[in-house]
Image 1 (spheres, rainbow, N blue to C red):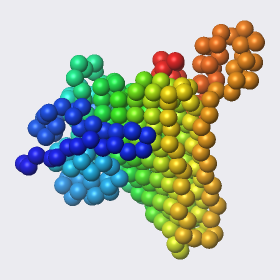
Image 2 (image 1 turned 45 degrees about the vertical axis):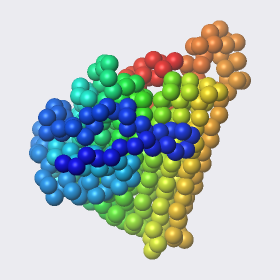
Image 3 (image 1 turned 90 degrees about the vertical axis):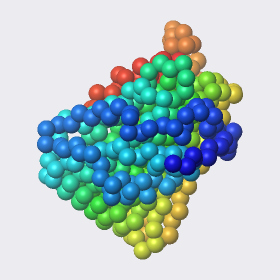
Image 4 (image 1 turned 180 degrees about the vertical axis):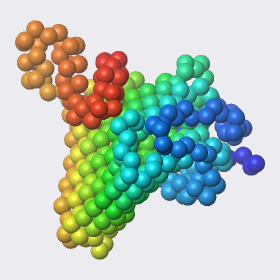
Length: 356
């Protein structure tokens, strides 16, 4: 196979992916040799190897990633699974996906079909072993929600500082169906994440709740997009980030409402807490509206810890470090609360505490 050209990609706040950091064997990687993804499902949910037609379909949807990564991913995309949730079944027990990155490179493809009237949660936990060398992961997750289905996908990424991570998540949502995303990003040296949802059917809905916490020299490149392709569809994007040290984030949010739709509602709100004078954020929520009968709004804000609240807590006997910790935990509380039913609240609070 012809070698894939790799180059440094620099943009925005000098947030960059340096291909040299992933090693000289970038092109020599053998995807077929990697360990299988660990997936635990409730009884009745099937897991099968992905077929070629389905694989090509989801790879065609994953068009918002870095071109060099797309080429590398697609060249080694033979591995993948299809998870099928049967019609009419509502599962209390979640699907659990665990990736403990133990390879130098890893490529993943996961497709989830939620059939009509089904309901399920997906919990994905991403971690890595201690490496002396660098590691790279590229993953594509696709959710197809049939009419009246509901899927909630929760991911917690806590890779080591030597990992470069590329994540693409995509959903297609049919009539009166719902796909909700909860995304937590703590780890990796460089993380690029794309979450795109297509509301294809009348009454379809989606909510994106995302949080990130950067420290040291971490670099995050994040994008959340919802496309309203049918009438009376609803979306809400809420993101909260904190940046310490010399960490940097580029964030792009987009709500797009297509021509010919009526009664659509799309909102987005992005807040970033700046904990260091050397941290940087470039946030741009955007609306593209081609219809008249809509309800839409967007906002972005970045600021420091409130000094009055900090002073109040210290006046009540708390040390400054403890008062800062309480305010930061409170800042993330609306996102963390969404993970309470999934049993991840304590884990995420511990990850926040470790950053402090």
